[in-house]
Amino acid sequence: MPKPKTKAKQFLQRLKEAKANGVTLIVIKEPQELGDTYEQMVESLNQLAAHDLNLAVLPEDAREG
Image 1 (cartoon, rainbow, N blue to C red):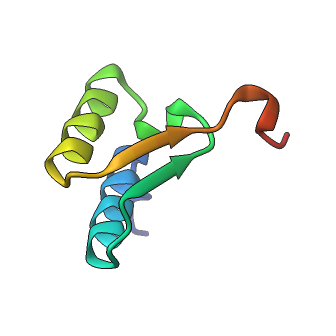
Image 2 (image 1 turned 135 degrees about the vertical axis):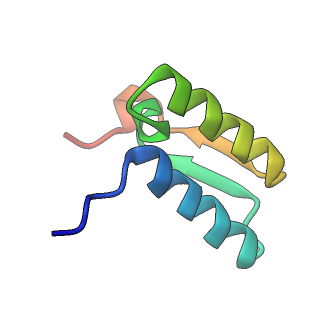
């Protein structure tokens, strides 16, 4: 059975797809989508900058369940 992707790998995939499609803003529901550990979150932010993309996180009161 294949190993599920980590949050950080999923985020990196989103960055690659966004860049390929000319998207400049990544919107996430909550900061935890950047990774499971502090190191993964920092690396996700580094990759975001390397891809020259912007990030928005929904405010808590705008998140569904």
